[in-house]
Image (cartoon, one colour):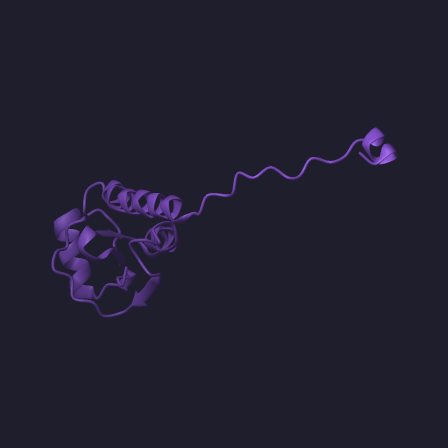
Length: 126
């Protein structure tokens, strides 16, 4: 969980490489990098939307977000189905944590409270 979701502002050279890889008609200015899971390219508005959501939705994968101006990208190809990749990685971690939490809970005692005396028992002192 030490990784952070990164919102990267691309340089002119990186924008040209990303457009060549993802299609020249796309308007690309930024990228969202999700560590080893992949990356997504698009406009600032598109990328900021995913960056804001994913940094909060996947707390077991990422410890927040970070905005970066200089970042060396290994690949300029958008990861297909990046959301599904993140969900598939996050769900087992959530399930394991919930199982652990249930196992750690101590069982409440099964003792019944003392039975209250009724009206007649109080009246006659029984």
